[in-house]
Image 1 (tube, one colour):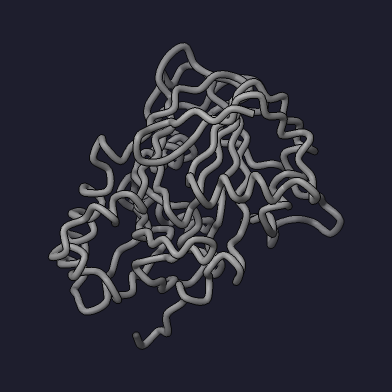
Image 2 (tube, helix red, strand yellow; image 1 turned 120 degrees about the vertical axis):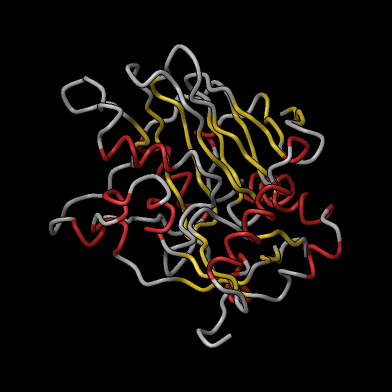
Length: 292
């Protein structure tokens, strides 16, 4: 296997690597690369749903946002980030589902609104448009290390509140009222997540964040926007232009991401599995009491 840097700040491409051969015995090597580099790209993979699920379970419990809606005995299916309808057509641009996809164009970390946030997102490309539809990653670990002390001091030690409907409201009031975006109570997380594998800190932000401890919502919005702008400077960002068969996975503790537009009359489909963080991933230090 050969490693090729994705940027000068974070991320590597694994060349000559076969994800279908990863198992419990050799997973430690992949996990070390994940903890070290925050983002991994493996091209030319034929990732079946079975292999995708097996790989995800090595990272931790698979996140299932629809567990409460499944019928008894109904199996988990790999979530699709897609505008492709069941009849093979594409979703209209004004459709609420398409507006939901557009909300993913906001910089975010996945699942900060859940009682247990995500550790990793493992995505593979299935169907791609003729142009556009890139996925961008921003290293909040590299940004935090480079951040001026005065800006760090304004957020270090503070908790941040997260709400799913908050990010959707930025796109559409109607979208934000859907039951899917109001299932879970607001979550309160530390602003900094430390990786116990190496002691490295990263700022923990998302478009779902709406309130910083000690600030009003208006003040919080301004501070969160300033922090996000710093973390998403070009020097901290990797933009991935997909090829079918690419697999991209990243550390949700240390990386924000967003999608980018494409011609919406063309299909785009990615298969995506998130895994939930565990205590061994530093989760206890992220939790804050409601009164913090």
